[in-house]
Length: 424
Image (tube, rainbow, N blue to C red):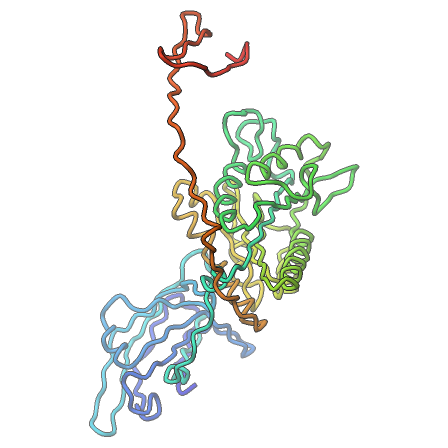
């Protein structure tokens, strides 16, 4: 750190005063050297908390003055606010100084934890910028090398979801022609993640229900330990309501997280024995905040080294503020993210971006931390390529008789469509 600004307390939009900094100290006179500017939340015990930062140069600051500013980005790549440069200039000759006046940081988005007091900005040269290094393997590199993805699903059966026999509740089962909110989320988000699953077989867990008078925080949904496809997930979900459960509480994620972490570790170990790689995503669907936020954060921290990403999806219209905090603050190694389903359910592209936002980076970071390189790209042999013949076009035009039940096949065709008697 080569410079610390003044501390501005109790202000969500601090405005820093003009300061003169010797360019030789700041950037060794190099106006294009990459500088790192960090913004901290002031703490009276001296353990100031990093909010986020930017990377730019003296020329970058000069070019940015009076414009839109820089996005203040957290370690997880999330925007925490905007740093605006009102004035920046180089003054003097050989003994030049950089002067930046009234730099302003605007408050972060409402979903971020509130900033009680703003601390000083730290400015430091980014020494690594001048030393080119070999690029780390990317998510695409691991996928091209045959890394397998696995998915497991956990569903909230707590009483706060409402009576599934009553219309308007989140688990409502009374209309077989309309999906409830959980089914919509399973179908849409599950389908996104399922595109990356290698065998389309998924464990489905439930939590928050009583069996024989005892609350279970992790139990198997359906009769099979793994189900086939998204339809299998929905089928196991529906079977659970016929299993004699009592929807109860509290909302506890810890056992589901531990179970998924064990599943993920086992999957990677089994794959490694065969020279392969396997990474797991846990999809948690819940209607509200966990009952013990601290215990959940501690659990996430304890499983952070597993080959696992956790996508927590908020169903319904509850206040999910604490879940967002869990996303941001649970661990120094990020494995969790939160998606509020209602915000994205009408926009498939937005839902896909929100769901997959952090998983590629989390996968990369796991393998980088453990020194695991991607396998060579999988080569598809020519004999493996099968070109299917074109399907015959079938005219499914149906003529109904006057009674509404009799069906006639168009003239010149044979065969027909069978409809069981009484289906109408």
